[in-house]
Amino acid sequence: MSHSLVNACGLLAMMGVGWILSADRRRMNWRVIGWGVGLQLVFALFVFQAQVGTGLFRFLNDLIV
Image (cartoon, rainbow, N blue to C red):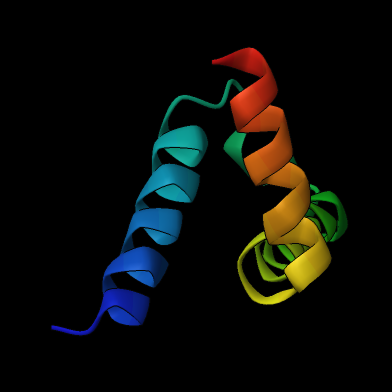
C-alpha cells in the first residue's frame, strides 16, 4: 500500500474519531473542517517540499536538541 493512501486513511480515521466523539454530530461545520485539512496540507507541503521549510525545521531541531 502506498504511503499517500495510508496517510489519507489516517486522516479520515482521525476525522471519524472526532465525529464519533462529537456531542452533536448533525452540526458539523464542514467549512471549518475543510479549512483545517487544507491548512494541514499546505503546511505539510511547506515542510516537506520547500527547501526553506526543510531548512527552517532542521535549524529549529538543532536549536532545541
